[in-house]
Length: 247
Length: 171
Image 1: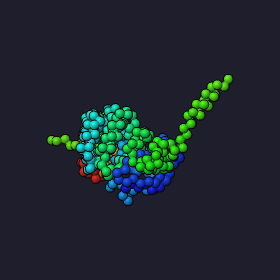
Image 2 (image 1 turned 180 degrees about the vertical axis):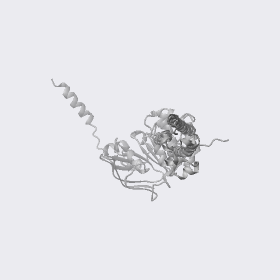
Image 3 (image 1 turned 45 degrees about the horizontal axis):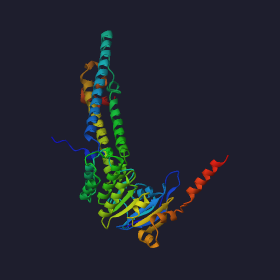
Image 4 (image 1 turned 120 degrees about the horizontal axis):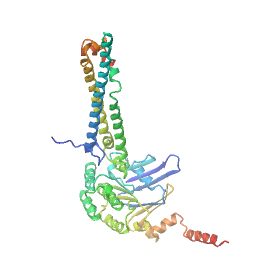
């Protein structure tokens, strides 16, 4: 169980990025982390991984996240964390050398699925291919908790659709995914829970089952939680056209 | 003889052999420049001392060892600066083209990032300091043996060990 308790993060000379975030992730959950730009999604993931300093506690099965258990996390980020000068093949060797639970079979299968070249330097792949490599490595590391921060930025819709299906097929019952994305309607079919962030605070946390009981889609829940005003576009257009009509 | 695998000592994707190659060239050139510069200045001092002898009949004195050595080993400082530059370059590589720093900081092996960034620069610095250190006694020996004995200041009379014991190496 990954538990966050009152996690707070403030960057120098700016507003707080995270304000008392608390929630838990259990084994096997596929959790969508949603929020507007600047809500704190990336900051939250980096705090979990210890890439940023923070106040509060993050524990994994009751223990702080340290070098002893960090291998239980993997991370796929839209910023990319691969080595540009290494080929995917060399990445496999690197990962296998440093993460004893590296899944070679899964790596090979995903590389085949995405049709990624094994012997081209990662820096020379297209943006979409780089995103795919990033996700392949995160899924193959052998981690229990897979954190993905907007991993599909730049990928076409067909690739994304295929990927969601593969993801659901390959994940094992004890693997947990925390997925941050803006593509709510695409992922709502396979996330089991949605955590909503706004200005560094958790403003919503609902399971897919609960939403279904309430008869709501994830998008409706998000709009409701963010107090999305559907008429704001119409009002803005009205105001603009009203200004143009003035003599 | 099998070449050592330097890949664990450099950031992934960097050619360690190339960096070692250029470091050794830098150290070698620094040693060569130091040696040639020292011999050139020693020759100048000897010429000056010979002119004094021819003009006045009294043998002139060449400068002390440190006076003749002064500045000739400067190139080693450049090599050392280059090693600092190499260290910064290795660190910077983890932020270029991607953020592989995120992966390196997630590794279970605590010293992996530090080792890959600092190993070759530190070894290069060590090599530079070692060659700089070994070159000086050699130059000191040349200083004592190449010029005629009459040109040497009194501090250096009595041979290598005598001069050494009187602190001639530091003067």
